Amino acid sequence: MSLMKVPVVDVHIDNFKEIWPSMLLAVRTANFIALDTELSGLGTRKALLAQSVEDRYKAICQAARTRSVLSLGIASFKELPNKPGTYLSQVYNLMLLCMDEYVIEPQSVQFLVQHGFDFNKQYAKGIPYHKGNDKPNECRGQNIRGLFLEIIQSKKPLILHNGLIDVAFLYQCFYAQLPDQLMTFTADLFEMFPAGVYDTKYASEFETRFVSSYLEYAYKKCRRENTRLTDAIGSHLSIEFCNYQQVFEDYIDYRYCNLPEADKEVTEQSKVGICERFSAYGWCPNGMNCTLSHNIDLIIDEDERMKDVKRKRKRARRRRKQQAADKSDNPAEPESLDNVTPTEGPPRKLLCGSSDEQPEIMDTGEAQAKLLCDEQAPDGQCGEKETKDDLYDGTEIQGDVLSDNKKENNPYDQTCPGAETVVEKKKMEKCEGGTHRAGFDAFMTGFIMAYILVWKNSENSTTMDPWLPDCHNKLYLSGKSIPLQICKSSFSKSSKAHKVKIELVWGKL
Image (cartoon, rainbow, N blue to C red; front, top):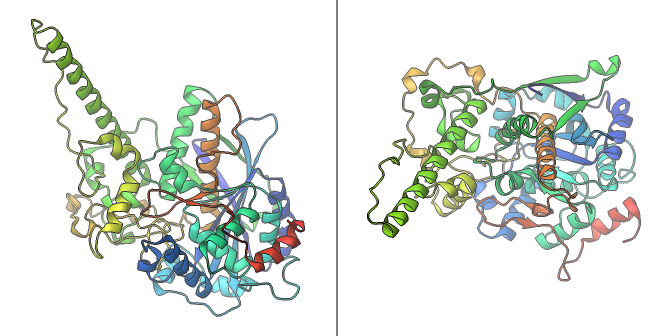
């Protein structure tokens, strides 16, 4: 799977009815469904990062009611019979047009245009929809709200990446008016998706323990680890795609995904040339004008090298402690000089106020600690970037909805050592170079989930039920040590609008 050619079906008002049967079949036969959105904005970041989760939810509601979904990505994954670990994936990118008034933020427009989003096409061929509660004769039929009801009715696990804002916008735009209380919202979600909601950002940080967890990093890291699974035990993830008819070819946008060469050496120049901010959080304020590398493969190479350095340091410390213990037990034994502390520099991705004295924390909880650091810091300190993996005044970054508050260690004070040696870096190397669309982002989200399932099942002889119980119905919360739990308790009731809708799906509960 060193080269993957991903077909993304472009869906708009002219071909929506033609592709409708294909989308329904993909949804109904899938094992799980991954969704992603492109938004017109999110408003101010301070409210979205409030200390109180209830206050955050109110800010998200305000954003969802005043902004809109510009495009929706759907990726279905169906495990093929008699082929363990092999999934058939179908990917759709739906161009949408909200028919209600909505706010569109200049920074969002700028980012989307830089990444190839065609606003002329959106306004000319976007699939129309209305937000909030159903209009007459709108809840059924060949429209976006009908498609979202099909996804709910399928009772399949819903997969998102950093998905709290995503799922709130999906609810407001395609389902019903968002309830005012967070507990009511989570109770509704619990009934809407009985098979569970999974957040691959949460899984990337707390299940696979990746150093970074923004979408493209997690996706490419999973692809690398998958090739290692293949070499080590033979049980690995395989993805297959449909052979589309010729009539569909005009609607398909192919995305090519390559793996780097095996054992690729990271040279001193490439290490100097990596953009520290982008490396940590998948976002850089300089964007495509940054003179440093945004190449995810180089970033992963360097992270793996640093992880190996830290592992060696830990092993050396352990040996020294053992030698000291042996020496105290045998004072006559001569001291060994074999174990010398490595002279490598400190890890590149540092926490605010941390040191390399705790490499195990750097490996496993680094991103979460960075978020905590950022939340405690005043504005303008400890970083100022955001995308759906990191908020930046409502701009949509990296194909994620902007809901993360990941910040680099003192990025406002960051210099670019050796920048003069990489001024001529090709702009095409930047990871923002057009791979991010809602459809392809949904595919990357689903791929991460499929890989983690294969990886976990290879370690367990029994099938997990539910999938990944530690990640079941948990949504990542920026700057919090615990996730948002999707549940229904005796203290929470479902909203009236939801009760009406859910009866349409599968009758009274």
